[in-house]
Structures are given as structure tokens and as C-alpha cells.
Image (tube, rainbow, N blue to C red; front, side, top):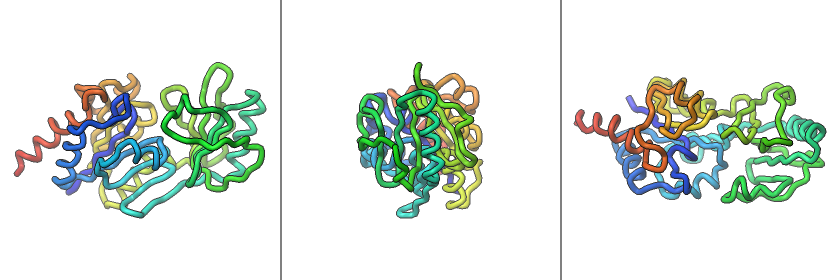
Length: 259
């Protein structure tokens, strides 16, 4: 039976300079040739993620932390936040913290009411004041956290989910829009159980997919909380092809022995 390998991008498959080595690409290509299904899972939107990975081959993808799922080829699904619920959250943040820094990602574009180039230097956001509810295909609300800005869980509307990335960014999506939520759709599409899933990650938003996969692998550079829920930890960090080296040592070698 086929197996699925899923990897987070930032801090996991990608080096700190946001590049992929030829060695990593080679290992993924060998695994795909051996019949493995390869999936990328990232909080990044589709265009930004594809720009970073270049010609890396993959079979399915989870973008925007699960709000956008590419099942295969042109089969895509979106988990859209109702616009009134989204703008109610933005209003709550503004009333409590003053001029709140907020960004949103829609199916077709990205908007922010502040200069977010330092947070996302490789992603373009259009300027928006969020005074009127005009975006009806919102997939994600982004709130940078800091001394003067926070997010209270009580602001969440029913059916919405809060994730914290790297301890400094609140991400609000539909309840089913998590990396694991996206993986359940991909597993169902390929008619495979979670036991056939090998997952890699480094951040808190990766914990669920590491815990529920047949085998969860934390990066050497992962947060301590992530390492505690993983079955294995890579010997090398993301700057030294940790994912690819683990896959070659623990998966590819076994495949070659069986042939």
C-alpha cells in the first residue's frame, strides 16, 4: 500500500534562507519514483509557497494552514470565513488595542492595514483599512502579536480556529482549516489511513499532524513542545537537509533492500 510523506516548509524542508538543496529535491524525486505520495503543508498562500519550492515535485498540498487544500492536479478546496464574522473579529481587536495591525488572505489576494514587509518580505499585501466588509472569500486573518497587541480567544466566533505561529503571529481560520484538517481530506482522497502517513514539522502548528500521523518526525531545530509529541527527531536541522537525510536513512534504504 502507498504511503504519504508530508512536510512543513519554513523551518523544516526549507533552509533559513528559504532555499531547497538539490540533494533534498533528489531524495523527494526518488521517493516519488518508488511510489510514495509527497505533500507540502504550509501556512503560506499558494503563490508564495510555489515560488519558494520551485521545481520540487509534489502530489498534493496544504496552503494557508489548511484553508486551501490542493488534493490533486486541479482539485482544490477552500474553507472560507463568513465576512461578517471576520470583520467582527477585526473590530474587537481595534476596540481593545487601538489601531490594530491586521492582515487577511483571500482566495485571490492579500490585504493589510500596516506595512508588513518586515514580517513577510517575499509576499505582497495590498493596502486596506478594513472599515467596510468587502471581502467575501476570506481564508485567514493574521494578527501580529506583541507588547501592545494581543488576541483574546473569546473574540473567536463559533466555527473558527486560532493557531499561533512561532509565538508571534495569531492565525484565525475556519475550524477545519488546520494542517491536519487538510491531511484528512488528502488521506480520504487517496483512500489511505493515518497510519500510512509520515509527517515532518518544527512549530506548534505542526503538532497535531505529528501526533496523529503513523509516524511524526520533529526537526532537530523544532520547538521543545514539538519534539515531545514526535515519534522521532531528525539528526540534522533544516539548514543541513534534516528531512531528506532522515528519509534517505529510514525510508529509502528500506525500499532499496526490498527490491
